[in-house]
Image (cartoon, rainbow, N blue to C red; front, top):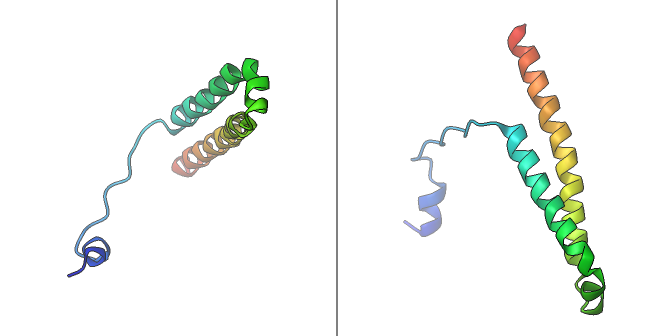
Length: 86
């Protein structure tokens, strides 16, 4: 049996999904990206001089996508609650 067969064979059951506060997790991740961006902003000229402005853009995009994620998981939670009430 090859290494790949050990991981892809149907002998294992899928693990149970992790349960938790998804909204809090996404908010925390978004805040981390935002804090990283704000910490780096005062050093923009150093980043620009060394060709590392992509670090700031990465943080900005992470924070922006996190905002989309917050909207998504909140809408998902509302939809799940509506479906359970029906």
